[in-house]
Image (cartoon, rainbow, N blue to C red):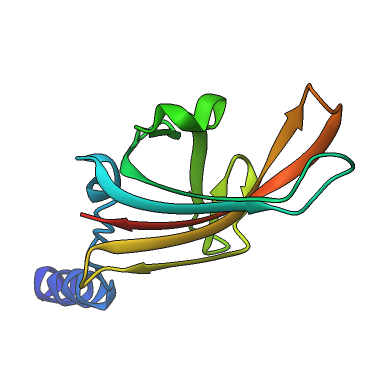
Length: 138
């Protein structure tokens, strides 16, 4: 009788524990292969530096460690940037700052990022931000 009672208690304890399925977020798809990318970047006039708007296209490679490398050499040092995502706040980051706007369309395997990126013009001595609008597709 004691064995049956002990078995019933153990069965009750084990059956009351809810097991949860692991959440498979599949972040590897972000960095498993390069993304096709269309970029528009712009900045307002700053001092003697005139306003500018540029369109670029190419690819971007995201690395699991956070590097974000554009294939366009005409972006100069802006070819090398950093990405991140916070699961706790559901916020996408570029260059350690929250994106101004972003979305991920899993069904279409596409992403949109809108963020500002700091720059300095040594010819005029002006500091300013480029505003990036980045459309990414696989």
